[in-house]
Length: 252
Image (cartoon, rainbow, N blue to C red; front, side, top):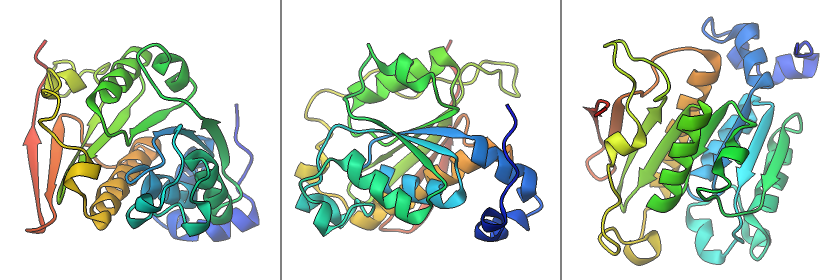
């Protein structure tokens, strides 16, 4: 199905994209056609949704069944004080409408699990993982692999974060299948080993760094530019301002 030509308003809105040779008009049309699912409208999901909306991604799906609390506002910048007590999905949709009214928002007010994940991700082109627990991460990664959807995964600790891109349904340059999430994390850590943000704390700006990197990887995947972080885990140490990359392979 063809996408309508960019309007004059859209050409002005996305002018800084259009002048980039790597994006241009065709790349902006790809963004307009794209359907991206974001799991979680929290610390990671907030900057992802804001930057993808600003970039002109045509349809954004939001999976979140939580409500906005005052303690969220230190890092979940898509919400504001007036949205405390409202559903995060509704608050995020209202913010996206203020950023870019051209974006269509689809809400999934539920908790993603192994039973419903595949049916949810099936309707999207790229999936972004902003979840905060291993059970959900495994369910989402398995569903994306089965449905052949690229997954942009990130996680954060107190002052550090990590990000990778998963496309295990494709063959890498080495002739082997690209690695899965389970190649990276064969099993979840024992309960209590990794404390939650509520227990350990998290620097708010850290989620902005990692979420913005997720938005960047998503745009690269949609536009077909650059080298996505497939088979590479990018590590960020906020206290030392250091980035490192670890390569990992399929164990199959």
